[in-house]
Length: 319
Ligand code: CP
Image (cartoon, rainbow, N blue to C red; front, side, top):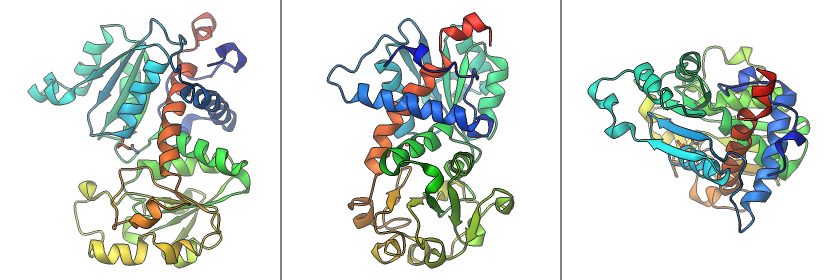
């Protein structure tokens, strides 16, 4: 990684959501992440940028991509990384989120990465602990590093986001990924469409500066990017879709629907995927898919975020 002084001081101590970032904050994180991609592609991946710093990953919900990429990102920056195993922790004995966090805080970490089922959990923690906090997904609220890695993937493939039409398709109602992406893409000037059955759209969607479609055939037309969302059946209390088969028929991305987008449209999915539910396998593994690139960009973005938050100049400036 280049010297941190080559980037402007990031004006936030925590990353709780895209909502709190300006367009220049976002662009500076993406620029930093571009440098981190180069580091991750070298045979020697380890740097000393966060040597001596302690990172704790506190995941109250399941994760493959986010937790492992935060761990790798910390290790590539030279930090000491601890993965708190919630399944075998005192949370199982009834300890509250705040008591768990205060206990970990007493061990003087420099950064706490939290995923929790409750919207606002990361923000609550940030008020209680003395270190930086990163929101790795809080309920259906935000997943800021996912939106940043998606933006990095798009920017590296297509350039300027302000010239692009991005279609976000599927279970928008339960999706923190959709919410963070809508905020970020709007901040960078992209035209954002959401495509979903009305049962899977949040009530405030029309206030989010997006064009809303209920048919893939209408919303995919001329899209530069097709971003599929996982159908989050674990968050569904009632019958939001008649059947998985019917959902795939109307809202699953297959070859015929993808042909409606631009011929070079990118296909994205944050993972984990339900193949045959929101996306056909031939599309997920096809030539337009950048799903594996998204995973690679995840490590780079998390390196960029942690380096920006733990910038040694912040102590001097008392931000
Ligand atoms: N995209 C995402 O957050 O994946 P995980 O749940 O595997 O972390």
